[in-house]
Length: 307
Length: 235
View (tube, rainbow over the protein chains, first blue to last red):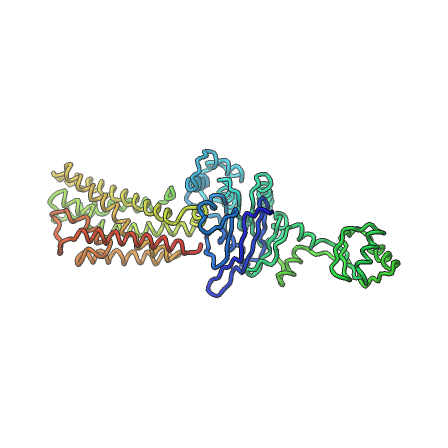
């Protein structure tokens, strides 16, 4: 049985008559990077805020670490690290001073925890620079340092690459991946940038207008988006038999009685057609198809693409 | 630590010298101040307690609550997690410490003014009286400001409304001192401070029991309301 770190059941958030989050059922497994993908205003941040208790829930249920969130906040939240929207720190203090405050608030006693967290994100310990003088990238790094300082089991990162330069984005991506793989931290990350989610997430949740349209592992989505030869034939069962026996094709998917997807795209389409025809299987059409995650996103959200 | 490098705070603390300085000028101008006790009432009590300190505390409390929202630190604090009541209690504690420091500086500068004038009755008794009353004001006034905290929290990202409310609240308290001292937290503080000063006369006898009951009621209700509002709000 899968060990779910976050599970939401029929999660709803309404502001007046406006439905911001609509019956969302999230399932985030232990040790995975879960990417919440959606346009700006799709409801990603609101879901994260509801999990973190920053926004009240209109209806539904949230379970974190197998416990109901409601009533167990004081046991659950110390096990979570998060950045929501912009990293919030005191502008008149240095990075180290800011982290010292949050270390005290969390009751942390380990003396080197601040230095360790700053080292992790590449910021200097005891730097005299005030937070208000930080660049956007440095602010984001400090936010991550604060989120991981207490060695949480779950990390919730809302658009963590916002404001970072291209090199910073790559570094952040590697850092997040390392946290998950090396430290076994479960990570919930949101982004409106498709490539970000594509490169990081094990499981992707696609959200649009507050509705979770899809929740699939990246592998499943990849399968859906793989390049393939789409064949329309008179009989898929006969076609499969011939293709397996005569050409050794095994990576395929039957859509219905007449449609067949062959994922072994290095095969010669002409040869396939010829083989089927010579075996009295009518080939009505054959074409190369190449769906991207963006195409998929467009299809299921029924609108424009995403960056 | 959070108020570190805030020049505004230093400027506010400098204002602790205002009333003692005005009192020196008042004395030099022929005002009816006969001894150090009278000078202490002018320098550290009266307008400091009625108007200056409550107004300053209203601004400082607005500032510290507003800053947490403005800088988005409030979200990080809730995520830490810190309970709403502990958060509010810590803010109240900061306000009390600030207020006590302010009154300490006022008391010290009042002594400086007294020495400068050359009062002969500066002794353990008069100094004890001055420090005792200053500390009482320092501790009680932040509690009397708690109703303003409710408005500060309710108005979320708007700081103009709570500052305007502070002005109205402070002047209302000041005006009510002349009529009744039991129904406004700030005028109750005045009643609690002056009730054992024989040289100060009041229109009506002070009912200290009512003062304590009402003051506690105002403070507790304001604190609880503030916590409820913090819990109800979205961030």
